[in-house]
Length: 411
Image (tube, rainbow, N blue to C red; front, side, top):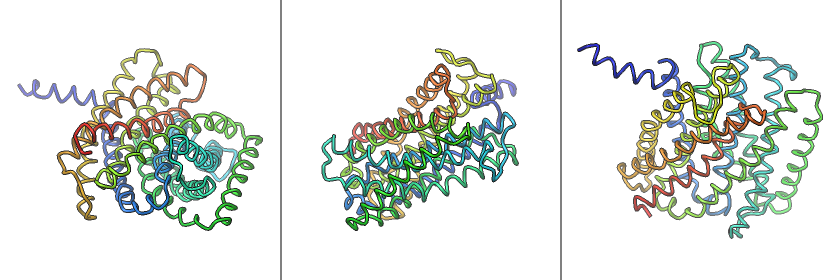
């Protein structure tokens, strides 16, 4: 009888992951991600006045926050592979694996921030949002906000990698959730601070033009460098990050189009960053695991996922239910604390679960088949996995939450 009761638990343990430590690490990281995304949600709910004063700024929000996860999530994935293959080591030298990855990440931060501002303006105008702020002011907000937040996210990513080596964590299990959550926390305040630099006419325009010129010079100089890994990371990252920027901006357009709904029920704005972050983090965990196992020769990428890949997919889907429910509960609590309107805990949990499970299902498809495509094309899945997942989730996650809101009659 005792053996019969233990058998389902043993099956669940086997389904949840390769070991108890890995499951605990991911659950802890996702729980922390939910709590830290609360700060981002509260910030977003509290700056509705700024969003209304600067039309088009909300278009930048999902993309700008997501880009920190794209760049530094990919950095963490590459560092995880370096740890597993024995090539990781912190050093001040620029020619080391870590040094070249750090330089690449900061160059990508500057370049993609400029690209993101240009895409945001172009897409907003193309879709009829003609009253958005000027493109050079968007550049100032995008670049200044990106640099402010990236310094913190970079330091955290390196500390997380060093901690993984020291304490025996698997960086693949914690990298995507924690890096994305830190990006959420520092991203919105950084954008708000950067918005204080605009509105000064020619001075703001001149600052924006200088930022565009500086990003071009930095990119060209880096691509002409003799640091092979730096050049490879930049060449492989710039195209996928530009595509990711476009996808994330479209997500921002979708949210901007529903701004009245979100401002009428600020609890939905509080929920939004955690919703996007959790879906992207779960997809990122899957992408990171698959990428490391590919480098180690443990997983073979084929059209139909094999046993090892299916175990990781099941692990991610099972984690989604409690984490999305927690997102809603935390958002409801935060909304009451700041005195904002909410549709109620039951409807908020329902919206989070419906939208979240739809988004995670899509994230699984992108993580697996995106990694498969990268391998088939001879590209580094560490560089492509996280950006493909998180940018897609910025779009699909936004639409999935809006779908859930409409389906539940909240609008």
